[in-house]
Image (tube, rainbow, N blue to C red; front, side):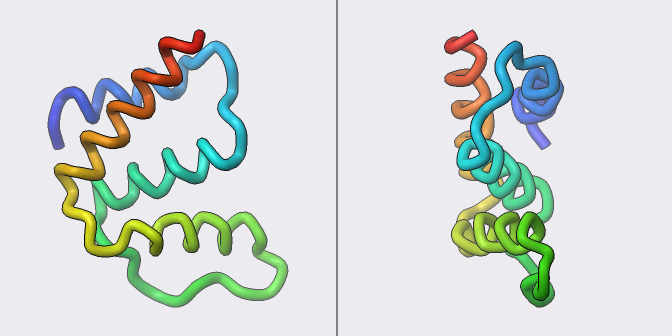
Amino acid sequence: MTSSFEQAQKDVQSLSNKPGNDVLLKLYALYKQGSVGDVAGNRPGGFDFVGGAKYDAWVALKGMNSDEAQAEYVALVETLKARG
């Protein structure tokens, strides 16, 4: 992992304003794609709506390489930090 990716992970914890759910899902998906790679396993079912949404956001990035995902994650965190 790059140091900027690691720093962005710390920075996202200290944002003054909590991002909306769509942005949180994007952050989650980029983080997982950047650190783990393509999603594996089955989509959570039943009433696990949050798990399903996270899975769907992550699977949408399937095939993106980890360096690209890390760069997008860092850029998104920088944008959020600039908003205050």
